[in-house]
Length: 176
Image 1: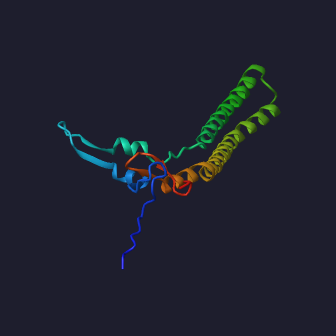
Image 2: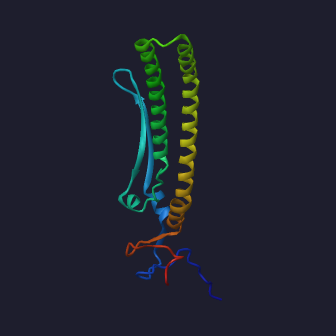
């Protein structure tokens, strides 16, 4: 009785070849990581490393995972900077009013109270701005991952490359 052979890879939709391989396998085979360390001639210690990839591995690399939420961290840092500038600007303005106009004692007391409250208020503002920026960054990154990155990565993992004609295809989306 003849044996039925099952071919684990799909046929190429462009040329019909059975010589196809997963992109993830080709990428792993064409990428190597390395680490180096040692001592220099003047007694210093050095360490480093990197990754070397073949041209094919570079062409079929998995999709890049961007960080679109990073702009919210920059917005948080800008808010932090503005809070510090506002703290010092208000403080310097109060001191200038005191020096130039010599307000009565009651107003000096109110100005002193405001100046003492500025420190904790600035710290609270900085903490709130930082927490807001981190939360916003996480929301944007989660949405990006769900709508853009994970679908692209899953398609990359399902894709094959024909070793005969070089075409890249997803068997789930092929009309063969």
